[in-house]
Length: 247
Image (cartoon, rainbow, N blue to C red; front, side, top):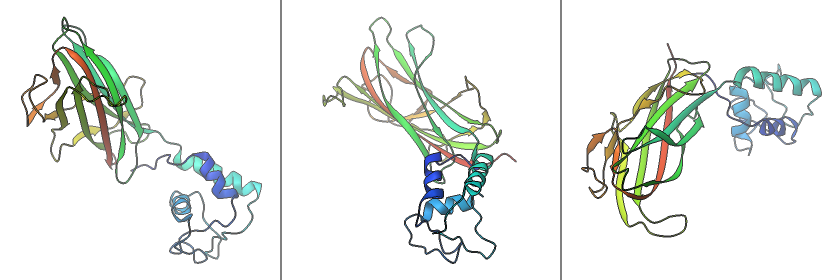
């Protein structure tokens, strides 16, 4: 799996210039495991940004000169200046109209656990437009690992009426939509080249909750949430698991 650009340049510079910087003793004998900068400096070592001295030590309190800073920054740019993103989109179709992206969320890929993005969105489905469809689409983008695999888990909570931000309770808890692909609702996305308009993949969702918003539930694996006329407030959460590099 390609390494990703996971740290801001300011963090890197603070590690280079700061005093009292230490590293895990399993990498350098002159650095204890319990140091507060353990994870940060271990990341620098693992990604080839710092190498330590020829005697095996790191020299956590040694001064850093300008040419060493240049070497650190060059290695950072060479090793980690790669782009990988997961992108999720909420697409709404009103009546006989065309599907229109209603909200979009993106997150850099590469976490060993999961990369999670999402947020809230509001929409109105007028009487002349009903029923309206809410769909989830996703894509994985990369400039180095085309063909790699990313697993994707969508979760969408749709409520009719109300406003959670304003503290107004919804009239109806409509549908709780989770991923419907196996295993555990995880859809598999194939990494594609970075593009302004990705080739989004359709994501199946597993409808739960009630039939108050016009769908059968629970347990219905469908391509869209169907809602009648009304004002809707929804919360979306999307997790991307970067699991497999291209062969």
